[in-house]
Image (tube, rainbow, N blue to C red; front, side):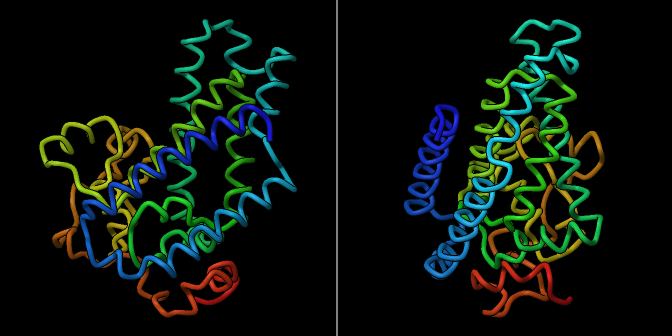
Amino acid sequence: MDQNGLLRLGIFAAILAVMALWEAVAPYRPKEVVRRPMRWLTNFGLLLASAALARFTIGAAMIATAIWAQENGFGLNNLVGMPAVLGGIVTILVLDCAIYWQHRLAHMIPVLWRFHRVHHCDVEFDVTTAVRFHPFEIVASALYKSLFVLLIGADPWAVVIYESMLSGFALFNHGNVHLPQSLDRALRKLIVTPDMHRVHHSSVMDETNSNYGNILSVWDRLFVSYVDHTRTNDYDMQIGLEEFRDGKSQSLLGVLWLPFRQP
């Protein structure tokens, strides 16, 4: 593993440990702890499967694309000659907006939804939900992001920073934790908080199809997909998809096969 990969892995592991400890000490929805062992096996199994598939297919596609663009003077940042800091900010904003639309389209386009519903069929909501994605979706996402890295002409280090932020915020906003209401309200004006993102995992489809943001919450407000709260108390709300609540749909093999089965 190269230096960039080790850095990202270290940041990911540190935030995962902090969030897992926070959930253990002060879980917002205590009932979710009961089902943790089986869910963690499935969710971390998906993480390992995704890492293995990426390792033997596209690998560090985004970093490789950024290096190629930089060496060949390709992309907006390189053509305009932006200062490094400004170019980094542009990279983070553009990639975060692109991921917002990737996420939204995954809910709108049936073939994409088949894979993305692996993430949504988790019947509970905690830090491990952040890594519950089908390996094919992870690979497709990396290719999609690489296209924007190329168009931006992103600096490789800006890509590393964004990817670290993306995984870190995913762990944070999927946490089974709760912030004081005043702090949550202040933070969600700019970033996605756990209470905001929990709405997105509601079993009510109108709520599932909302709050697509990953790091910045401004995209949901700008593109009119923001939902402030669930119809019920989010402390008691039902998480997941109605059609995939059986044991078969929750096992590791079951979720790997889920995109290819009905409904």
